[in-house]
Image 1 (tube, rainbow, N blue to C red):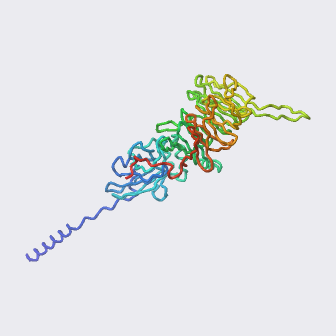
Image 2 (cartoon, rainbow, N blue to C red; image 1 turned 90 degrees about the vertical axis):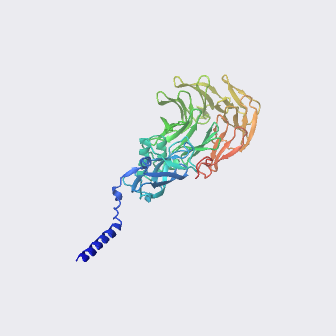
Image 3 (cartoon, rainbow, N blue to C red; image 1 turned 180 degrees about the vertical axis):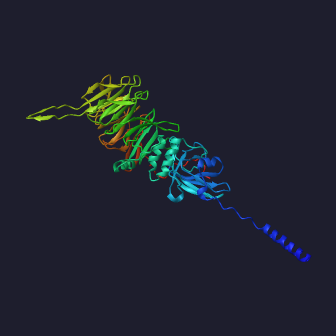
Length: 506
């Protein structure tokens, strides 16, 4: 009996030992529905995940890499967080919106983009993005890291709204981001959408070239660095004081905005614009005041009052131009009152009048305008930094001096007065060639090889004397230095934004 008991005890011990060697049953992972979502910036700051971005497509898309660094399941909400360039300040920061492929992430509730990660799992998701810095270069070959801080509430709200409305065009979202507005304005109607997508414009100031294509505004500086400055841009007016642009407001009507050179909120609202007339030029007149040149009238914007009023009524937009007096700050505006043939009364005509040119002066202190001079002895007139110029009826260049036009030289046959710059006046010869004239003597400085039509819309860089224009074949500039015609890279071309040689590429 003692033997049997001993054997039983040994067997029991062996069985217990074997049982002790078996692995303990593992606990079931927490159900995904029970794992709370953590915003990306918060998860990174707590060390729950690591996150980086690569292969940006300018400011519109980026490949986001997210890795769970822990031993538990995590749910990370990507919407509303942002990425920082690995080399700080080298390019724009990117705000995260919806994924490019809808089912690449989970929407737990409207405005969320959730990625579910097992312990130590890594995922790569192609994300739609917005630019957060209009004054910095567009991303090229840059690498990014996820920010550990949240965005300001108004910007996070816009990005999360975009996540809930992923079909909203990127340019409309980015426009709200740049203007620091919580409401996204989307063009309505076929005409508005077509205008936003087909618009192509060019302008220059101080050697910086500004291009608008499909509503996106970019700048190209003298070092070849391209920056993305805005979206939903309908017009752009670079000046010495600031870059002004026309964008749709909350009511879908045109608003004038001012681009600040730095800061998190680059675009500042200036004023509502007349929706019934095209804005042709913006002329800063000191103290934040502006002369607004519309197709049908000239308005004075008073910065302190925050309002504008019509000061000059126009018969036509032809020959409309303006310059600011360096000493007085007065704005001199050239206008044209076309010839009227009158109405026939038997063998006679009543109401006939010859075409005339007028110079109006806006007093910046009172915000009013008065006609200063009226001329019949010119066939064209234009104002610029060097003064007010005209063409005689024989095509001789003339300059306004002490209320009278004086001929400069004896060359006849110039068919158009194109632009007046700081150190040259551009005219068009009778064979459609651009000629640069000395502003004091009228002496031809050089003739450009470029041929342009008389009615072509040319914009002047008042600092360099360059002329810019756009055709169906591209963006062009005629250099004020020597008249050479050059084509500017298309802003949407693959090589339009050259890679930053100092960018991280590993």
